[in-house]
Structures are given as structure tokens and as C-alpha cells.
Amino acid sequence: MIDVTLRPMRVPDDYEAVARLMQTTADDLAQGDRQTPKADLPKVDEHGRICGFYRTRIVAVDLADRVVGYVASWRAPWAVPGTLGSHLVVDPNLRGQGIGTKLWEHLADWSEGLAAHVLYAEIAETDRAAVSFAQQHGFAVDRHLFQSRLELAAGAEVPFAESVERALTGGIRFVTGAAVWETVSQAALYELFALTCRDNPAMLTPPTFDEWQEAVRACPPQYLFLALDGGRPVGLTQQLPLEDGGLYNEYTGVDPAYRGRGIALALKVLLLAEAKRGGVTYLLTDNDAENHPMLAVNRKLGYAAAPGTYRMIKLLRQEVENETMFV
Image (cartoon, rainbow, N blue to C red; front, side):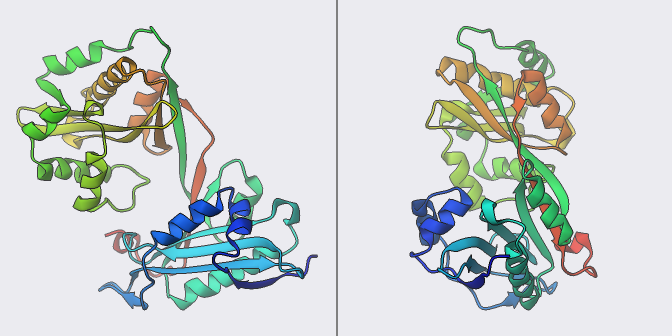
């Protein structure tokens, strides 16, 4: 067994060591700190759930003060009240020696001190030892999240082009680019987004109007497609270019009242055609294993899934009803 002690992370001295454990860079950690708000004093909402921003970052060090483990927990201002995020990592060469347990004990004490209700963690599905460790400490798999990728072969025909014609025949029309903002108000578009994003099992709470507006305005006009029934917006897809020539699916959703009519497929086919015209080499999207309708569309188009992560959850206050947690 290795002899370790816990201490607060020292900024910026520990950036390099923590970055190695987290498989990131010291610059990324520093940038994240610059964008992090000042911590609040503990406070709760009308349901008794913690809100505001809090954070703890602790490192485990050996006798030479070398960082061999790290744990962080936080409550972001925009997250569901009562919830805390968490991340715990141990040097792969030193696992199984009690370091993770010591870090977990700090995390448990800190969460208890805040009277939090729910603790979340995201763990790579391929890291079976980490998943097992989390389960041993009371976590259960809540969601399986992963990315899917579609390679765009030069010269290949766009599949399922007939889906667009079927939607048009059914009374749906499509607009893109600047015409989107000339056709509907931002308020109406956000209303569609807020309605459809609730059906994404992985989304705990929708972004605010300002957050949504910033994201949708960052989308190049040619990669924004809107489906309408008359003047009513009923479907939307928006994509962001990636530095290596790919295109990332920022969001795709269809009004629940219009599902089953092939609108999501038609939107993605229109996007696919535009991407090929623009020389895009691949499409990338995030998936939730429980979002079966969108998974079916992606598989139909030929997206290939990659190993992802498990979102794991630990209930800290059993007496709280789930429906009060996520209002």
C-alpha cells in the first residue's frame, strides 16, 4: 500500500500533474479556471435543494508530494438544483492501493456537508475498473452516452433523398440560412427547442434563452435547417464546423406532434447534401442510448457508434421524489 495524504489542489503548481491524470493539458485547466465563476455561500431553493456555484478540488500526494490522484466536485449555476458533478481519477499504475477510497471519502463528506441530493459522474464505458469502483460506492448507471460518426465519401449519392419529397408532399416545407430568421421569431424557435430538448433523455435541464441564442447564432447559416407546417416551426437541425473538416450536430429535434412523419430524416438528408457540397469530410453527433427514435435515424444514414461514457448517479437523499428533483 502506498502512503498518501490529501491536500487542496495548488493553482497553478498542480496544473501539469492533474492534467496528466485527466488526459488534458495545463492550458485547458487554466482556461477553465479563468471562465469559472466565484463560489457562492451555501443556499437552497424553495424545495430545499442547493443552488448556486460550489467547487472542491483535492489531490492525493505521496511522500515526495507527487500527485497520484485527484477528485473534483462542483455545482454549476445552471445545473439542476440539488445536484453535484464529480470526477475522480487515480494514477493507473497505482490503482487498488486505497487512493481512490481516500478521495471518495473526501467527496462523500463534502457532498454531505452541502446536503446535496444527487451526485453525478461520467466514466468511460471501456474503463470497467472505474465503473466497478463507482458501483461499489453506491453509483448506478443512469445513461449511456456516446458519439456516432458518418464518413462522407466524395462523389457518393446522398441516401434517402426521397424522404425530403415525402415531407414536402405531406405539407412540410424547409427553409435554411437567413430565411430561417426571416420566417420565424427567435422566441418561437426557442419554444420549439425547449419543447423538443426535454425528450432528450440525457438533458437534465434546457439552456436558457440567452444560452440557446448564443449557440444557434454560432451555427453557419447554411448548416441551419428549419421544418415548418404553414408558419409553425416543427423541426430543426443546426450544425457546427470542426477544425479538421468535420461537422458536429449541435442539435436536431422535431415537435412531438409531428414525429413519425420522417421529418428528422428529411432534415438530416438536407444537411447531408449541404455538407457534401461544402466539402465536409464527416458528420459527428452525440447520442443517448435511450433516445431510440434519433438513433434509428442515425443508423439508417450509416452512422457508426464509438465507445462512450456512462453517466452514473448516486442518490444522497432517498426521501426526495425524482419529480421534485428535476423541475
